[in-house]
Image (cartoon, rainbow, N blue to C red; front, top):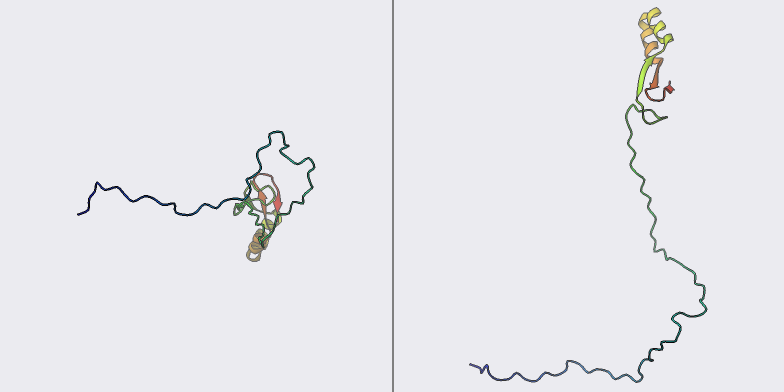
Length: 113
């Protein structure tokens, strides 16, 4: 078994530090922090083939909703002429009555034919 009371070997530096030829200039407290005359520089943002994507908010489409105000609901009504055709020209008049319906908005009152 080894002797645990024995001192470890001396450490050696892992690498040699390079010696610089000149030291950096010393700090000058009275020197201006910014150059006195600024050169105008063009700001150019490089475009690396990217494209801008605009995401539009989702639209909620209500089935049977009013296209004018987008609030009301369309109600289907029969016209007076359609009802008269249905009564006077009974078998074919019902088809005429269904063809002459009109839709009215419950909110704004707009009529869509």
